[in-house]
Length: 343
Image 1 (cartoon, rainbow, N blue to C red):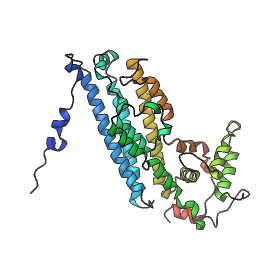
Image 2 (image 1 turned 60 degrees about the vertical axis):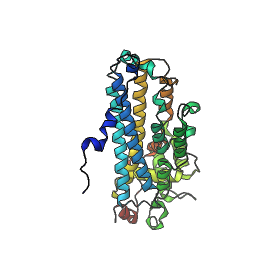
Image 3 (image 1 turned 60 degrees about the horizontal axis):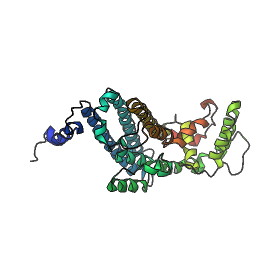
Image 4 (image 1 turned 180 degrees about the vertical axis):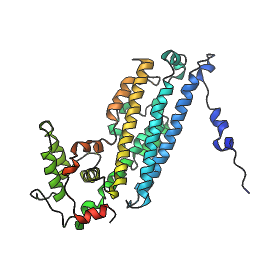
């Protein structure tokens, strides 16, 4: 018979509840808010661990040669992506608790922390890398791993050389079956003159989209043309972006509901990370003004730079510029409509 599980032992509470060592006390100072500071950041790291765990599980599914949109695979991916979004929302809200600490409260123990810094959170860097943030896209490349230990740098480099969630989603979108199945298009009725080398649907869609542009939006036509027929060198291939755009346009069909939620959760992940950075910038500005961070970074200036540059799924977000009124969308063939309704 197995041993009974005890709540405290299962959660290893002795380790967790004795893991808060206040640096101020080591210097004979009782800086009350340092306990809050420690617990908030420890909880952040625990949640980063959970996010990494979820991303790895999602990647395991997305690595399959074929992710069946009618199977439970996609449902699991969407569910776990949504969990990541909910966790990130919670992490944003934790800043409310941290902001109950005033600048003077922080100064009671800040100098004792040097050179420790949130910039040394290797788990957060791994989260960003696993989601798809490349080294060359990072703000402050010259010192983004400069304060980490060798084993932490090695872990990050290993992640950066592996398939990211962005790349796996790109491959999934490229395998999207709608445009490679000729049976779906043999009875499709084009409304615009056919152009050689362009799929009839996209030829029609481009025509409809351009007709609906206001005078100040005409430049968007070139962007859509690039997606439809250009080679492209962005994170998501043009083939993947065409699939994603089709999903966004026809998400009301049952078969496209989960793919739409997947894409939407990726955008929500980016938004929550951006919101967290924005709140962090404002909090740091409030706490230390124009002073440098404890780790030697430029403080709020670095955080502001990262806020502006570290959007991971910006290619997907840009597709919203190329949406047309659903009442004017091309009419799909009966064969494709039947397939999108699960037959």
